[in-house]
Image (cartoon, rainbow, N blue to C red; front, side, top):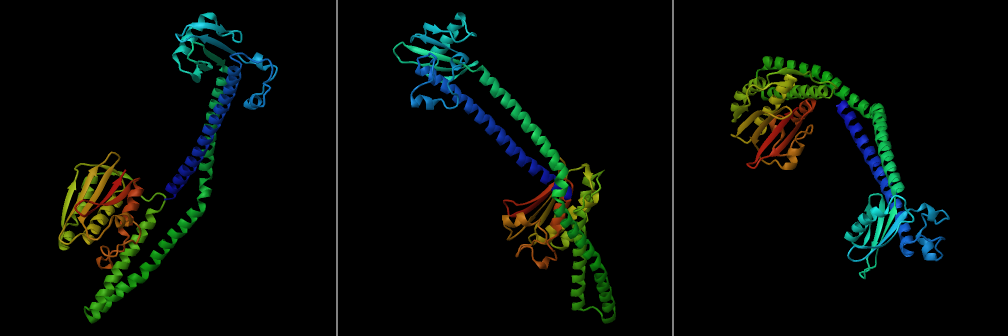
Length: 410
């Protein structure tokens, strides 16, 4: 249990930090992209307002100055801004080109960019290492401005690469730190669980002696006075207390770090042998026990606890099955291991009750009452055995009002 708790803590902590760091990485890259894109749009606005020409001095109007707050216009701006402008008619024929502010584009390349601009509708976008703006007035006087953004794209690429690397490194460091410190983080819970387990173990051992004395005294009293209903009731309650103490010790043992010892064993034979030993018990209680076991299955697990799981499932089904009903026990192979199931008729059990059957000491008011002799702890042992085998248990109601309990062992 402690190992599973520690693993769960590590998974949750690492997942939470990973989500935050990934979100931060996305935010940083998105903010950087929108900032760069905004600066490019500001430059395109400036060129568009001057009909494809770079002004030699800053815009003088308040509106224009406010339009370019992120990239101030300096004396070097006309020389550092690289762009070219194409003028073309409605048929896509080049009318005029301005290549004076670009060195990477020659007259031979103009026709390709002109055809691109003619195919596109009016608006802005990216192509290769340029951000463009295409204006079409419908009168044959169309204009396309291509603004060089190679440095900006390289900047975005570097920011993206570095932020991803930094995120991965941070996640790895956080994972290492969480693994190293997880023991201290859950130490209070571990100590509390250890104290609780020690209390159950000590209390169970302390109870064994008085229960044994009471049982022996009752036998002696019965020999002296003969059989009596009050002695029988006391003996029944003593037996129930013995079963309860044994169950508590089993649960306490299942909470240990390594509660089971796994070996390969013929699980089909073990389950069948255990189930067949309950045929008479089921018959005496008015139930037919039907056994369906997939033959020749082997399993890597603890044979003793698997047999115990089968015994508890059948005993539980016999105690709480509808009078005269048939109980089905089945064993089948799954992708990861095996599945052991019981199906029996039941009354007055709701889906909500089915979800709580594996809680310790849980019994529904009507169908799992004290008359059955159970403590509501057997299915808790079933769940503990399944989890010790890296599996799980589930309970569900079938369409014909039967209770199906399945333990999958991986």
